[in-house]
Image 1 (cartoon, rainbow, N blue to C red):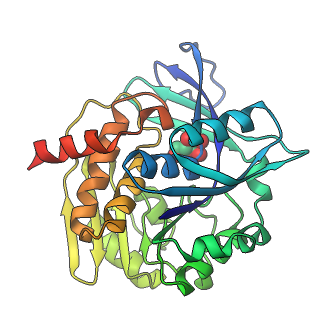
Image 2 (image 1 turned 120 degrees about the horizontal axis):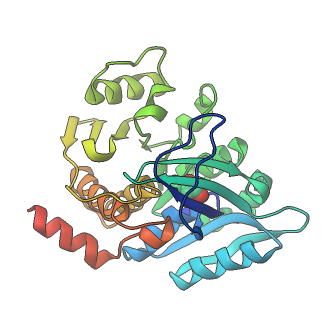
Length: 305
Ligand code: RIB
């Protein structure tokens, strides 16, 4: 089973000819809402790729919260432990997507910020039976630390996607419980004093050394992926696709990687699953709306063989 402790957001999206400059107003396309949030996206990604998946998080006692629970449930994510939080709004993300597929995102965390270590303690027996625990940084850090500690003690594989990029260094008590750290390039840079011009494989090795995490995977979008682990460096190219919206492509990567690992595939094979899932997600608009099925991922993997 894959367990996700993390965020649920309603994404409020507008497409724009380009990203606005500070102080600038642009006229964009129609306004659209999509279920999102890095935690929920990774849970839905894992479930669509065939894993038994449960989500632990918080939404507000409002319409967006109901919609997010329902849509994750429709994708076979167990949402029994997505709690309703009176007095707080459901998390929202304000997203602008430009024609090339790049985006900017600002989050109002709302109920995500109320997910406490005690909430995780309450479901410790469930976390303890996970094969893989997926974590991100859109819920409070003490909650992430507690979940990682419970899963690590129970022998689960702990994957941390440090997004959004942490402000300052992550606590050693968290990193000690992490088996795989999966930042993108800008998130990876936060872990080092100086990283400009450093090749990704060197960056992955340096982040592993600084953090003491055995496996570091740096996602590079159209540049593929670089992993440093006990067997050294692995570099994989991206699948070539026409990107329309990169929102949740990183979440799809994490979900695909986790599903493959949970099925006993090698880390290198799991990287390919992640790359295929991420590439497919970039070809469609929205967050959870863009996440691929298992058949789609297997199809792209076969094409790449
Ligand atoms: O990773 C993409 C996600 O980041 C969006 O769905 C948005 O909700 C933010 O959490």
